Length: 203
Image (cartoon, rainbow, N blue to C red; front, side, top):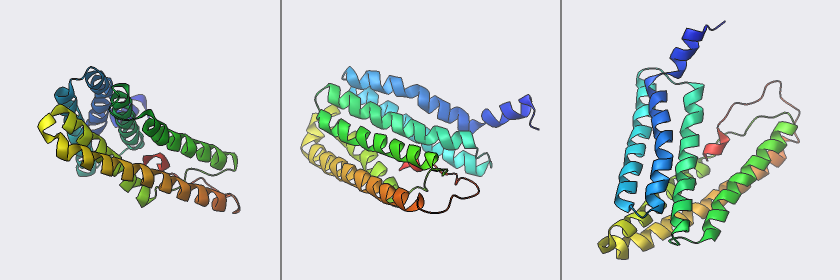
């Protein structure tokens, strides 16, 4: 049995503290973006990205990989993605239909998760395509922001950012369709003895 002090020490690891710090910066990033303080918003995003890299490196280096950290990291990624979408859409820098496309895909995955759970299965393993799609969105939206923050870069940043973001949105749904196909296949199989642990919503 794990005592309270041991459980606390597992939660309060350096990587997890960095993850909590990154989560705390999400509302700061959103407020700065909505208030058109684009340079400051990009700085906050850069700091968050650096802590994302650092907490992963330290978790491996110090052998402090935890389930909490595995949950916090994708949660923070999702929140930054949604914050960027909402902030840019609120300023009419991107259309609301793009927000609906991205958020709709995550709702779609949540429904698939409910279907799997109701059939006694855990989340599906992350598909590599989902990771590529998420990376493309995380790259494309900041490039669009870069063009807004520095107008001199806009002629190059805007088309590149839009191309990468739209490609990411397409891959995002393509990965979602693959998850749907896999869900349909899995629920036809005999129920496993134990659920498969995964972080499907990362992709």
